[in-house]
Structures are given as C-alpha cells and as structure tokens.
Amino acid sequence: MRPGLRIALLLCSVIVLGCGEPEMGNLQGLGAITVRVPAAWKSEEPSSGMRKAQYLLAKQGEDKEDATLVVFYFGPSQGGSVKANLARWFGQFQQPDGRDSEAVAQVSSREVSGMPVTLVDVSGTYAPSAMGPMAPASSPRNGYRMLAAIVESPAGSYYFKLTGPEGTVDHWSDSFSHFVDSIKEKQTGG
Image (tube, rainbow, N blue to C red; front, side):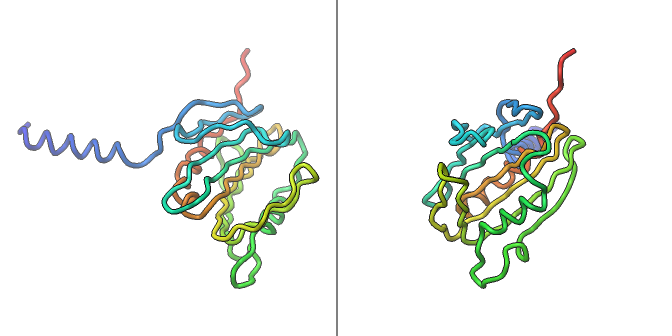
C-alpha cells in the first residue's frame, strides 16, 4: 500500500472513531436493572429517598445551569401508569403559545433488552410541581427541555428524567439515548 494512502486511511479511521457514540463509563446496578453510565456524567448522591440514582450533566455553551438526570423506582406495580406519568410530566411544561405540552411533545415507544420503553421529548417553560413538603415547587424556568424514559421492567417501572436548559440537554441527548439503550435486566447468579 502506498504511504500516502495508508496515512489517508488512518486519518479517516481516527475521524470516524472519534465521532459517534459517547464514551460509556461504568456499569451501575439500579436494583433489578443495570445501566452503562456515560463517562462524562457526574454521579451524585440522590437528593431524596424516591430517587434511585442522580447525575449531573455539565452546562454547555451560554447556559447558566447544569442539567440533571434522575432515576425513580417505586417497586412492583408502583409509581403509576405510563399515561399518568406522561400527563404529570406534560403538566410541568408551559408552552409560549398557550398550547398543551402534550400537543407539542414527541412521544415514541421501543423495546430495550426485551422491555417496553416509552420516550418523551418536550421543551418550554419548566415549572415542576411540588412533591410534598420536603420537595416544594421551584420557580418556572424558561427555555428548558426534558428527555424522559419509562422502562417497564419485570420488577416494576423505572422512570428516567433528564431536565435542564435546552442547549445543555441538546448536547447530552445522544448520550441519554445510549444510556437508555444500555439498560438490561440484572442477571442473577446461579
């Protein structure tokens, strides 16, 4: 092979390998499932007992705040239906033109490791509701986006909710997708 061609092929390989999938970090157990957490995400101590895991995703560009991904798990047959959770999440966003957030949200379904997954993508003014006296409602935040997934595992549903400024969530959207795709039912030894 000619040296010039060899260098060109090597450069193309570096470019192709340097793009695409985000670097995935460690495998983390979340009870009945495991996930592969992207290396750039910072694991945090969950801020409430309802959270199974919590991650900080660093702010990007001109955004003034980081994004947060939280994982909720309430047990078998707990946490409400997919429809009820979607309705609650849509209610946390207000649209500038006054439309219902359900009308502008993107909702899709797929299977990951044999488990049904419902995905949601919605933007607008984020005004999360109070979750009791220990987690009061926060002030509305304009220009926010939420990517969320409900994974229906045999042991009960897991709720993954990534919220933050639109630019930051845009930046992390591919790693969120790879994170969801990495979900597997935990294998028991034996």
